[in-house]
Length: 209
Image (tube, rainbow, N blue to C red):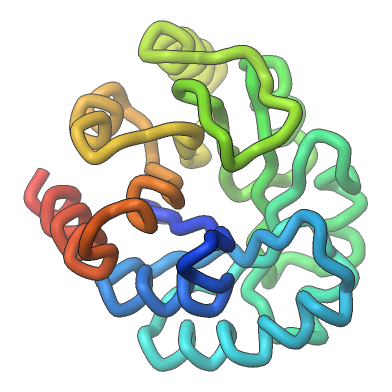
């Protein structure tokens, strides 16, 4: 499974969750994760009704954060599970093999566990400090990713490792050159003066590597 850039939806004073997804898609991003941490299921379903058809229009993968029970209802392509969410193998039993399941990891042992339980990809971070996530795990930095990638190669674990957490545009190519399978972004796009243009530049950068 090829992954380059994932966009994690975020609500700001300027943009709604729907706005943020639209911005990323118009900028050429092909992977949207609907992340609404403090929202009710009803609020998530309401937003998904707009985001899901936008993803289809742009031929983008649509992933929901946390809520395994909503995946089929909102016609998502899969789910991303945090460290305190449902175990990957249980989610796989519920969803079957046709859905994408991602997991969060901060150390190699967590990556390996997710892989053994049937994960399709692992989001690993944070790369540096970020304000978009509460209860931040220890910062990984370049050395942390190098260690995880080396361990994955040693154990023949070949699922994509996605770097996440405080990543800026100038970090993207160096991270991909390490062997990272993709980059997850949010604030670096939304805080730009021209967010759609920023995403377009990022996608062009990735495709040119």
